[in-house]
Amino acid sequence: MTRSTAVAACIAAALVLAGCAEPRPLPTPTPTPTEAVEPTGDGVLRIGALLSMGGDVTTVSPGMVAAIEVATRDINAAGGVLGVAVEAYYRDAGTLDSEQLETAFAELVARGVDVVVGPTAPALLERLLPLAAEAGVVVLASAAPSPTAGSVTPAGCLVRTIPAVDRQAVAIAQSLVDDRADSVAVIAGTDAQGLSVVDSVRAALDGSTTSLTAVERADSNTTPSRLAFSITSAQPDSIIIAADRLTTSETAGIVAALLDRGVRAEQLWFTSSAVADYSSALAGASLEGARGVTEGADAGEAFTLRLLQSDPRLDTVRFAAETYDAVVLAALAAVIAADDGGASIARTIRLAMTGGVACVSYGECLDALDNDQTVNYDGLSGPLDVDDAGDIVSAELRVLRYDASNRPQIDGSLSLRP
Picture (spheres, rainbow, N blue to C red):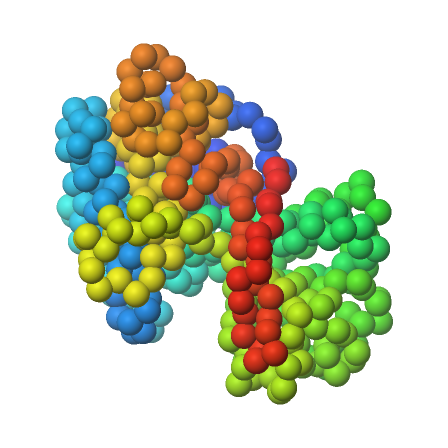
């Protein structure tokens, strides 16, 4: 099969699992039948890791690399994919101001990778998606909560194992409905992701007694005082801040303006892109009591020990569980499709996590598939349910509450419901 045909197949599959900048449709509870595509694999499932390895020593990338290594060992110990050992290759995605991402991805394509895990930065993910679509490679996003708007194309074969920003906003909205809040306002980005946040919150509130009283779109050119005046004029009970292109200082400026207009910290909810340490950006205990949500499942003691065996120097294992699950899902999708090609994996990956026999490991799922049973992989990060766009629609999010130093602390959990 020619590369151009593989690209066309990936684009066709992406109509079901698309990483695109347009607002996604409402999720459906059962998988949508998909048409078969011609095999594009070469018999070996190859996993590519494209993660930024420089910068802060507490970066999540080393833990994600360790998770890929552990997942690959587990898959191969269970017999590999279609009887052949899985291979993994690792490249540094670089930084936003370099072209290392493009060079590194080209090297992975030359190695024949079928799926790529990463990168962690939304802006780098945005740059990767059109390249991956052209190469017929599936992108598994296990850390970046959203691609930013702009060059993200409908041809990107994207599947997430963490909830995107708009789904996080939905979880907050669902919680407010459960608490019988009268009204809510939303501050979202000016890009397509921001539009998706607004539309998703509006859909989550539909049919409830909680009304959406104000919507503001914010970017780096927004005047905080003007935005705060508009929001507070609507007198919402709660305010969701989900403008994921804003820097910490820009978000702090908007928060300060809201507080100056009489908003109480307890009224504020942040999605993960806006959660930050505001101890030096906001005065006193002004943010004490504000809440936010963050993705990233608890890796657990046993899995953490396995990760440390791969890399004893790990500082954090955040997103390791989601990364492990992404690799296992890719392997199961290749088995279901009887093909390791990216287009086939994009077509069948949802079938590995929807309906069927519940299984919690690759080996257990493989046994079920060998017995002609459908499977529902419940991974280390919890049950995984995705919609037609490849986005998580049910999950447990961690809740953070700001203390007197304006720093977020873990304070319970919040459920995202389909």
